[in-house]
Image 1: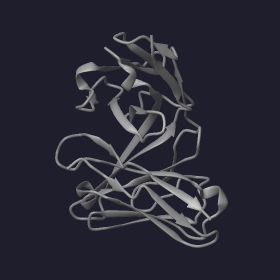
Image 2: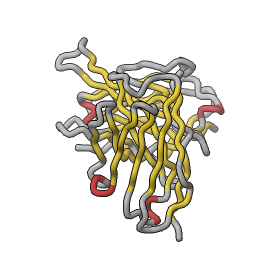
Image 3: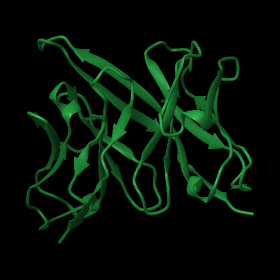
Image 4: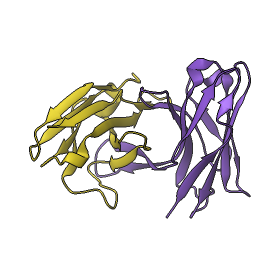
Length: 130
Length: 109
C-alpha cells in the first residue's frame, strides 16, 4: 500500500522560499503509471493544485504559480520536492502531496479521460509570518 | 475552460439520497473524480473514472455524468457522510491543467 508523507518547516518568513519534501513508501516513484503532485489548501478554503512531476523529471505547473514554483524528483530516495519562492501570507496553507492516476476509456468514442488523486499525504501546515 | 463549479452547501435527511453536482466544460470529455474531506483530515478519493470506487468506499457512493455535469450520489446518507466534497478533472482544452471544484459542504440532518 503506497503511502506519502510530507516534511519541511512549518514556518517561513515573507519573501523567503518554502521547501517541502514528499517521501513515497510502499511503491516506487519511478512507476510510469503515475504522476506526483503538490496541492494546497488555505485555511477554510478549497483545494488548489500547484503542479506535478513525472519520474522522468518532466513537470507542469499551475499557471498562477508557475513563476515561483519548482518541483523536482529524487528517484534514488523515492522522494519529490516543492520549492515556492517569494512567499507571502497568501501562501499560508496546508500543503499536500498526492499521487495522480490517469486512464483513457477506450470503450467510448472519442475516448473519455479520467484522472484522480490517491493516496494523499496527511498534509503539513505552512505558515508564512515574520 | 478550466473551471469546475459546485454548489457551496447541500443538506440531506439521514437515510435519504443526495446528489452533489459539478459543472464544467472539461466534463464533456473527462470523468470527474470526487473527494471527501472531513475537518482536519486529508481528502479521500471516493469516486473516479466512469463510476469506480476505491477499496473501502461504501457502495452508497456512486458517480454519473451528463453533458457538462458530473454528479456524486449518496444513496442512504449516513451521519458519517457529513463532510466537504470536491470534484476534480483536467482541463480538456489542450493544456494540462488540473482543476478542482470549489467544494460542497454536505450536512446530514
